[in-house]
Length: 185
Image (cartoon, rainbow, N blue to C red; front, side, top):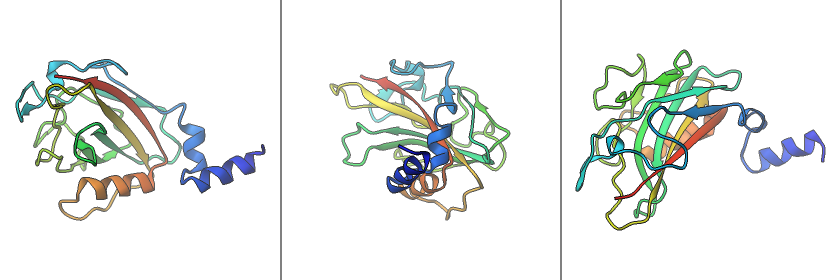
């Protein structure tokens, strides 16, 4: 198989060739949680029957593709019993000079996020981080913390939906890196 064939196949399935090449070097890590492991009570939501600290975890990322000028960060639960998953956190227009967010940066009205960053209203109904809160008795849910490398600042309408934000980020991403943790009550 030639490089040209691989590039053609990547375009056919909706991926850019750049994403394939850079995906292995673009990584996201956390001091507060580990891939494949349960998150702590600190990352559990406070409300909806949950009684955690509702703190976004510390996150760091490295190895972004060339041409990255902004980042977006999503936290998504594909196991939520909604038929469409659950958006726990979406932040867009994080400047490329940022490669780390401290614990608690996702608090509603956070002054810790880099200037120009924008938090999108989550599925709990507010702009900020909403922690894990799977229904009692459910198997462990997966929480996908994904950072996306973007070539330019996103232009979104006021109060965009999680789906619209997801569409715009995915359509413009140069690459992405995901850390997946779990949580069960």
